[in-house]
Image 1 (cartoon, each protein chain N blue to C red):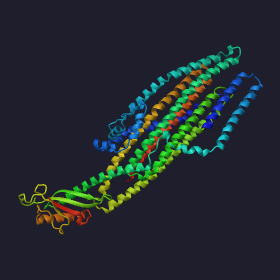
Image 2 (cartoon, rainbow over the protein chains, first blue to last red):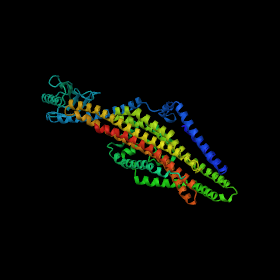
Image 3 (cartoon, rainbow over the protein chains, first blue to last red):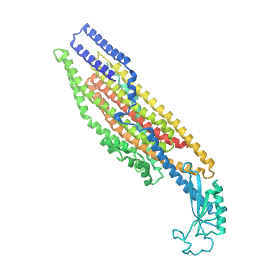
Image 4 (tube, one colour):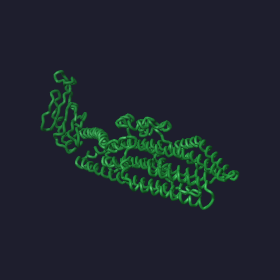
Amino acid sequence: MDVLRQLIQTIVVIVILAVFLEMLLPQGDMRRYVKMVMGLLIIVAVLQSVAGVINSDLLRDIPDVTEAPSGYHPVPLEDIMAAGQSLSDANRQEAAQQYGRGIARQVMSLAALNNDLQVVDASVQLHENTNEISGITVFCSSGVNQSPTPTTEDNAGPDGSGIQPVIISTPGADKPGGAGVQPTATEMQAASDIAGLVANFYNLQREQVHIEFQ
Amino acid sequence: MPLKSDRKAGPHKKPLHLFLLVLFIFLSTAPTLAVAAPESPVEWDTRVNDLDMVEIQRLVNRMDMEIQEALPESDIKSLIVGLAKGDIPLQPGEIFNQSLQYIFREVVANSTLLAKLVVLAIICAVLHNLTGAFEKGTTGQLTHMVAYMVLVTMAVGSFGLAVQLGRDVVDKMVVFMQALLPLLLTLLVAVGGITSAAIFHPLVFITITAFGTIMKNVVLPLIFFAAVLEIVSGLSKEFQVSRMAGLLKGVAMGLMGLMSTIFLGVMAIQGVAGAVGDSLTYRTAKFATDTFIPVVGGVFSDALGAIIRSSLLMKNAVGIAGVLIIALIVVVPLVKIITMAFIYKLAGAVIQPVGEDNISDCLNALGNNLITVFAAVAMVGLLFFFTIAIVVGMGNFTVMLH
């Protein structure tokens, strides 16, 4: 643009000079000659600029075109990707939590179909990366459908609540654990049924479904 | 020989009309988008706080006071949350009224320039008519020319200021876009547009910077040079360089058209390619989940989809805030430029009956060139608006294809 700026300056000077000469010169042929000479001067100025542009390195200024103004440094793609991925992970985590809560509610509804056992809660464990179900734990309360057993200090749980969890990892295979709560045979059978139902419903291995008595 | 710049003014108005129409549509639909926010205010605040907006806030704080006052919220995070929740109503009628008031204020502020131009033109006309009274005719001519030069110097001075204003605006818009786009691309990645963001990143930054630089360093100076040559042509009827002025103006306009076509074409095509790639990746994963996890396979992807949509809403709010700020950056100087053009054209129209064709044509040509400057700056704003719209729309498109 400097070349063009100089050309415009030259043309402006030549035109102003031509206008002054036009005023100062007497009427006659001289005016026509002066006008022609001034016209030639403009042509020379234009040609000189064009020659200058052709001879210069035209590609020299091209990299400057893509440079950010006033020393501003664009954010690298890696940073953008990392920030976006972090947000995406947070979204995924939130979705997994919602998913887990939704499945837990479904499990509770399924388990509630069995009247022999009262289901208190359910929790779902998910794989971190694939978000597939890795395990389901169903919390049941023991002794609801039978005569209540008085709680003594001997069978009180570690939290002093008198309730000891009983975990059935594989119904029908494992023996129920827990010292304080002893589920009845009916409850054990119901737990086994629920575990089988949940495992089949969610296409899981039976070992992946746990029943805990409280 | 009269200058024939009037005919060239018509096409320049099209970008302005288009810009205002698109801006109007975008701003008038913004609250509708925002009202769809399904989340609680606390959650919005948490989500906004996760985003890095330090650079944008710094730029907003550095803006002119009148732009900051025009913003509904000077705090960018509050602005985005307000837009997302629909708390900030953008009333088109109110915006229109305020714009009219601002234009009127600018016209009144520039009335001094108008008065100076008219008085000098009248002096020129009187001197021209008194030429015969001098002993030598050239004395009158010389005096007339000196008065003309004074007028032209004054006009070129304010014209140069307008061009410089345009260059500053382009610079500000480029810097703002450089700060806004990383945020939009981050949100694009968050909604699953990883390929789109990877394609957009180098493309959009290079295109924006190149477009801004060419507009600032080539197109606007070319318009200025064309204006100078048109003024010089008005000095003498015998010695004309109006064709060269026309050539420079034609090159400027052609370059502007070419750049905008390339800009929009490249952005749109690359964006769509990225969105399709992203949706393919997402759909493959979704198919695997839905197929191999019976009954509840779709639950996770549905839950993720709902959360992604809320991120999308956030991205749209950021986009609307960006458009709003770009509009304010560009509108205030554009109003100044168009007011100045109006003043020049009004001065030319007022002077014409006095009998000074040269000066009238010169002022008219300056007015037309200022309208070209206006069109060039508005074109930059419009294309940056399109860029934001494409990046925001690309996120919507990606999620839609999910």
